[in-house]
Length: 613
Ligand code: AGP
Image 1 (cartoon, rainbow, N blue to C red):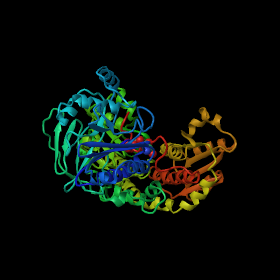
Image 2: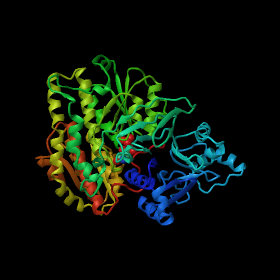
Image 3: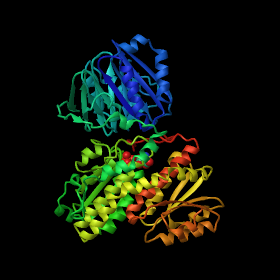
Image 4: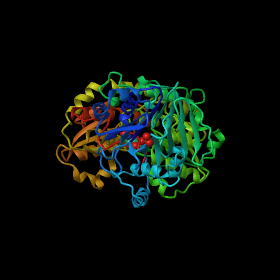
């Protein structure tokens, strides 16, 4: 997704801006640009491709003294929405006069009508983007007060924005604003950094201000003045990030994804720490902000999310049903937000999101609140929009997840959902003895994962046998069905192999027609109520020439017999086993992609956080 960095301070804004863009690269993009304000002149350089291309191009185009001298600038990485990733479409964009430069995340939905109106007034556009239209609109509104011009322009647009604006007529300030696309402001000593993601600010300060929707701020090197779009001052507290830059470095691993897979014993321990009650056989999730009485009033849980977070919710559905005996539903967030959901005050809606910024999931939160449901979130990024708008929930404490392919966030989401089910279950018919046993099983999750990670070399050797497959089926039953879906998503998004996940029982209803000799079938067949049925499906696939990779329970010789290859995970409660089983598939997909020479951390066409619809 697009990234924004703005800087105003002592000098050499270019190095801060380029460094910030590099920290945002993991979000996915296809072009980049920056603008420096030197005296009363705006210099702009833009380039398709990587930030390194932009840096080289800007340094070749610009005077070294200007680069060193300029203390104000804005920069952007663009993930193309309107128009291809070309230099002309890259941000920043100028207004008609050339005095105002803008970078923008989000989508201006009524940009065509605004563009037509401005063209009728003589404006000329150089790009296909909605952003350039917004820049021209700000210029058209500019009567000598940039803040007023930006406010007037934003009152005319429909859609979402996170912006940073500079003007050569008003040096010494940057105007920033947000609606639906995150903006965080780093408050330094004699310098201020604006970004769409805190990872671009970490190297400069831990003190940040998060803008809320319809906030607009006048930013100088020494002050941040936040107002609403009607120019009324609003108070936004300064928060501490509590993150260090090391957390966003690779730490010696070849890819962020491998680092984050290997971090899971630690990230899971962080998710679980202090949240299990081994006296009552329950869990302590204080962020839910609910008393046992409140929880007893809940008659249904509806989980909403996208992608990997949706798969975590699907595991949660089994956990809530089996442990808490409570009806649970899973809804794809975009489907939920537009279907006028039937909800009431006895419904608990749980928004699941690593980034806490996914547009559809955020919209689902807002819709659920409109319907009077009890809303909370499971997110990883502290201070993210979904976390702040739900006001209650459980942080994953997984640390920054940089690789686009989500790994440690998923396993932490599942572990928190297991603890949520335990908490709800103990408020119903789940006994203390059952709770004590499950609490111990959850406590052991980091060790289960550690034992899978120790098989990394074996899994890499297995992966080498399937590098040339262009199609793969992932099958599972019960809670291993969403594990199969997640495994397929991991493989397809980083290796570009066409991988699909199916409920194992579904094969006979059509998909098995696709099986040919040598087709890879990954069967998640760990010990559990449906394992034997899954092994039966494996036999059906083998009968048609498929090659079977099994994820099975250690010592299950019956399962070993029907697999061409297998990864064995420790014996565990079927719901708990979903986590080590997933880690096995994460490592498998990572090594297949690595052996295929794929990009891995920033797959083509993908973004880390989908903040547009
Ligand atoms: C998963 O590997 C992808 N990165 C993607 O499906 C992701 O899970 C989805 O976009 C939801 O993101 P979120 O968890 O930040 O809301």
